[in-house]
Amino acid sequence: MTRRTDSRTWLVPALLGSAAALGASALYAATMTRRAERETPPVGSFLTVDGVRLHYLERGQGEPLVLIHGNGTLIQDFLVSGIVDDLAKRHRVIVFDRPGYGYSDRPRGFWTPRAHATLFQKALQQLGVTQAVVLGHSWGTLVAIALALQAPRLVRSLVLASGYYYPTLRADVILASPVAIPGIGDLLRHTVSPLAGRLMMPAMIKGLFAPAAIPERFARSFPTAMMLRPLQLRASAEDAAMMTPVTVELQAHYRDLNLPVVIITGGDDQIADVGRQSRRLHHDVPGSELVIVPGMGHMIHHLAPERVVAAVERASERIRPAA
Figure 1 (spheres, rainbow, N blue to C red):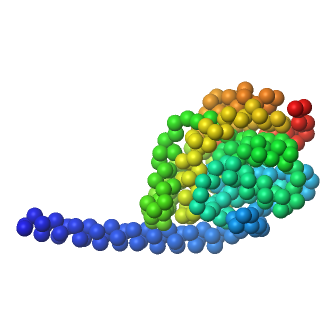
Figure 2: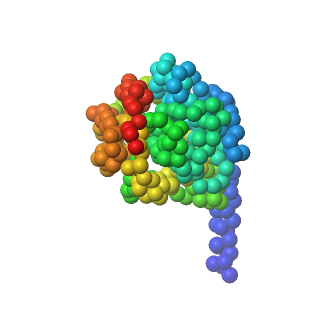
Figure 3: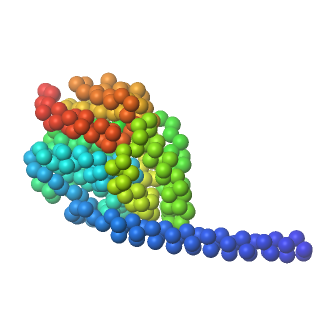
């Protein structure tokens, strides 16, 4: 009887304390989400495709150019880098918030690169785009490739920046998986995950740019708080969990890319190994061009924006090879 009584004396306070901590975390997450969205309102327009509300930005005139961001980021990733303003001098630049990022919806489902591609193909049709150059960064390269495979008449050339194309063992997939699981993941991302993410964010961002320094413009202007909202945390976790299986499927089709392809990457990218990823893709895609920028990390559009802009212009000028 004494043991049972003793267990109750600590169990009830422990449960109450845990509930109070989760409640405080939930309040913190909701408060920080509202603050992030108040400080970073939508910068573009909205359209609805198959019931999914997409946020997109459009700048400039000329040949259409579609920019597709990577995991965890949003439209501002390209805006802050400065490449949108530069490219808009010669192109009609269209930048999407991928589903679940920024201000785009993300209904429950399997958001593979091909699912993204289908959505963007229909969105571009609504915008009157019949042919475009497509640039993808990091996870966005998989979406760009899927779009080129599914809609070869729409995508006339590709620029693939800092991409992950072939399956490898990744610790981030294991770490992100719990947040992607319905139920437990919902609880985590509305309570402790935003707080944990805020603590880990400086090291994570440093790793994205390493070995180069974080540009002052990024540190000053990028809305990192938007990355910690519950929906965006789910999107990022789901995309991380998808990385290995989707590359297993897509890698079988890289040789089918019968269009101009420019591959650009930082020579010291610590997120996507240059030899295992970009060099290998260059070997597997006939006629592709490979640009390796020495000393640069994963965020190549921030670290060498002029090289990325030049890659876009070369891709735009190149002619599709004969079938």
